[in-house]
Length: 503
Image: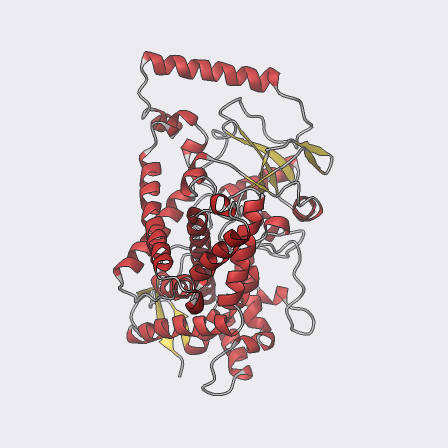
């Protein structure tokens, strides 16, 4: 695979000389010029190439690293080309890094592809800790609480689910691509929150955005060679060009909406999250004019991009996985519906106030997130200073991966971890048991998911409304494929599903 990519580089004499000089310099530096640290153990790897050849790219990387950890320990060192990574595979090491030493591990991994996608790290998710990042995170959280919390959240969920339910009833009895309908459900929620707008199922722009999410996830799921082999940055692969062009479609969508909000902004008529960001920036500039150069319009565009893309993608994939699991386990689907029927009166729709009385529904959602973590490694961290993990030394600037899949499938913490069993998350009284560090889909510490407090009730309400109104199954003679797609991602495969109205 590597050879096929390298063939894209024109090997003139000048290029050969540059590559030879770069190789000799890097080997010399990595062999003699670096301070020696007591790093976590790991398989031997040749300089520059690292473990790229040792990795079986046809097998999910999160599973391979968990298997390697049984030999080398829960904290292990991995080299992706010349990039040194430390992978944490168990509860104790993750708790030490993210909670006990959270400030040390709060940095973000830097890469060529991420820098391009975020206009130079002007977003929240991938930006390093800084005064700008803290301010953006603060106003984003305030904006989410104002437009996607409590009754506002309930209102937006009802709006988006009602449109999807009408469409599902129109297609009743017919095999449908359920991912498209769940995509509409979640996309409309965020479209309403961010821009006070709504899509229809056949809206050209919605289908274009859904295609961007699908294609980007598929390609991002195996990473970029450009992040590992610097010469490819000058001669990028077709895959890299394709992703950048695809993501530019999404960025242009966000930029156009943001520009329209700027043109029509009124402090007396703020309608959505984007209005709130514009208002917050203008208020900050009035207090300190220097803010105008520190927090730019592009920072706010990237913040909207974070909220929209992360909110849409992780939520829709989680709901998709949950529906597929319930189809595979119809007895569990019936238990959820029985709980809904018992708690709610005839004809009554679920609300956020009903959530504490629907613990089994919540357990199903949590067990889905445990078994099928959409982002098995989360977002890569980076150490902000020399630090430690257990007895090992971790240099400043080391990339740190949290193997969430390993935490969720560790037999020391979960009996029969490959089995979908929601009851494991309930206590003796049938209520949702307290969350532990071994269940970590939203990460923890300084870089925990910004929207966790909103995402959990949002997904619970969506799932409750869908199962209150529909039973999901496969067409006769077919079954769902629960094999995840991607090496770095955990994505559901497309399946034709039938949604039947409950009588």
